Length: 188
Ligand SMILES: NC(=O)c1ccc[n+]([C@@H]2O[C@H](COP(=O)([O-])OP(=O)(O)OC[C@H]3O[C@@H](n4cnc5c(N)ncnc54)[C@H](OP(=O)(O)O)[C@@H]3O)[C@@H](O)[C@H]2O)c1
Image (tube, rainbow, N blue to C red; front, side):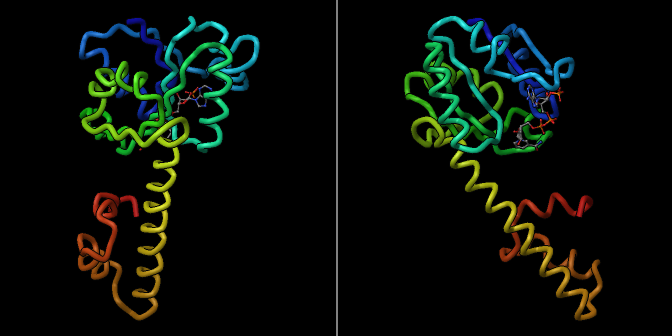
């Protein structure tokens, strides 16, 4: 199988490394030289260069409407899009423990399942095109509101005269607080 991997940032570099660890050889691309160019569309976009029946697996967190639009564009080139955004952060990507939220036709998911399992340990088929990114939006809503609620609670606590240390020590890890926030203490 020929694998092209686009985007070697915080997540992509670790995900690509995990595919290589499993013996897959990759053709990699990072945009930097052409920051202003279109990634997929346009005369030099990669869709024009993929063979028919190629699979385009998009792991970015993007608007579901973008996934649906790109699935249609890809279809015009006889390319199959799989939207497969992930949950996890850099260390989780490095340990190949990402969760993939997949929007795709089932046969396309089955073809790439072994590849996803090199980079993650859970795959959820959420439905057709755009449903993987839809799930990711729902999860990001929960992350965002969890973070906002915690910030409001900290602000209220401090106004009431409770020390920041007391608030952190007491609140993080409680069922009432989103569990991912415990790992963010230093950053908060
Ligand atoms: N970081 C996390 O904890 C995390 C967790 C879950 C999901 N995600 C999602 O994973 C994706 C990548 O996140 P990241 O943290 O790895 O970001 P990042 O370090 O900023 O990397 C982004 C990568 O995408 C490339 N890129 C951006 N715009 C492009 C364009 N128009 N054309 C071609 N390449 C382009 C960048 O190329 P350049 O090097 O040229 O800029 C870079 O390689 C995002 O969708 C993010 O929401 C991230």
